[in-house]
Image (cartoon, rainbow, N blue to C red):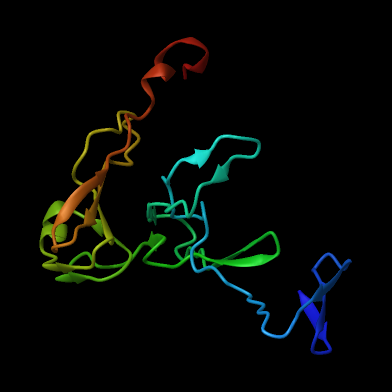
Length: 186
């Protein structure tokens, strides 16, 4: 957006290049440009208040999206970034260690302040200080991988409010039981 102003008239031209007319202000009028830190339904945000039915549905107020972080670990490339996403010409801020967590080498340490550690249960239990929200993928727990492909199992734990690890996610049985017969069979 760009604008030109002579004190009482502001011409607004949006990024589409079209002139959308003049905005007239009287003495004492105010014009605010606001920038959101967290946007509705951005990555890392989930459940929210109900919307009013209609076409399109409308919020009755701020929807209060719950924080539901994305946990990314053991992926390639080793550096995985979300950073800032370009959405509809605007910038949306998706924050590391708030909206998403990535692999961090906190296995074998006594503290885990960011990211996701990967290791065994004893390595996770050795961590005596953790920051709420960080994760740890425990490789020697869970028995969901039935494929015998050598890839192992695991479960994701997340640090709670008082330096305690809480089981957060266990993958569903792999391969999926419906792949045993019918059109999806291997």
